[in-house]
Image (tube, one colour):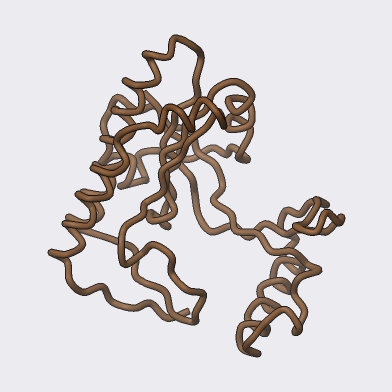
Length: 210
């Protein structure tokens, strides 16, 4: 995997501010209809990246700091709005490390509370070893889980890929998952059929709330 450098940092700062401004308010009407809402880091150039051999470098320095600050601003505003509903709710930051741009703020009510609470395989992590956690507000309480991608065994066939190199890449990943004995389950795929899915560890997810 090759990583591409990021250019246009002043524009990225503007994109971060727009993302925060567009995300600080819950869509209350939609929230009450579906019982959940989440906000991913929808910031160019990281959002909607195509699947290619090269990926953008994760944000660092001031850009990383401002994104983390943006997640907390969104969290705090949502918390204030959720309190006004007068009912139990789930509200957390799901903070990926090192894949920061996969992070999100997630909230839910009713049946979504239990679903979100059971979304991850919790593990023990040393918080002081994470420069992401130590840069966040001390008001947060954190739990740690495994950050995973997944791959369906049945979908790794040449006919499902436009380019051979993408197929070979996925096949190598699947073979690695099988050889290393990565966690796997039998689930329903998008066609409603039973299929085996392998979970590929990518790092940690810090689950934080105040």
